[in-house]
Image 1: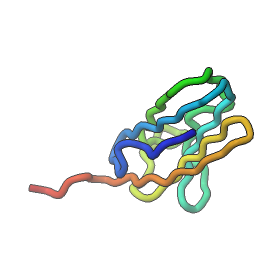
Image 2 (image 1 turned 60 degrees about the horizontal axis):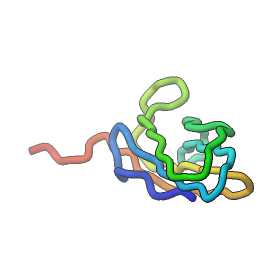
Image 3 (image 1 turned 45 degrees about the vertical axis):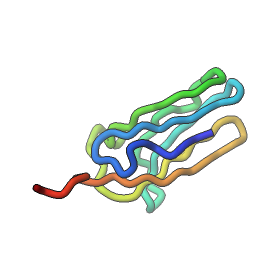
Image 4 (image 1 turned 30 degrees about the horizontal axis):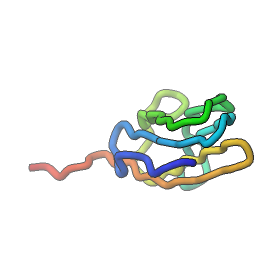
Length: 96
């Protein structure tokens, strides 16, 4: 159903990929480790069978950049659900 986001860790944008063997309504939501809802990427949206990717730009529902830290995304498709952890960092490389 869902795969590890790429890149992970990330600092601004990351791709969330999923595959559907049959048409389903999909909900994808991002939460912090305290269980607080950060962003809804898809809400009961209908997808046909196939492979898909959605981009999360690291912003919350209000367009503000989410803080660096651990997050999870939860994908629900039909009766199935999967949760995947991901890491947002301020900087991915050390200063030269």
